[in-house]
Image (cartoon, rainbow, N blue to C red; front, side):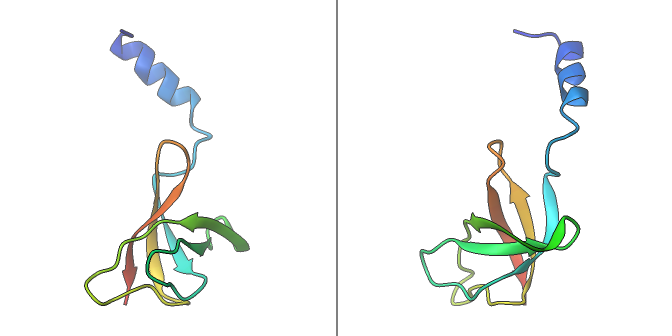
Length: 85
């Protein structure tokens, strides 16, 4: 098992990783059970990221143009945590 100082040193070396959470815009209307793409303006307004997994909020599903918060798992895969409205 690594010592804590080794873990922190490794973390410092991994600063090139994606941020854990970013503001995004839903790029397409969602359909239940289908992953969708987002744009992340702070990275590139034109590049699509995804497909990203998401879960419905009751009867609400993401629509094109909605603001969203996207998180990345340890594999770098995007997940749509929340969207507005």
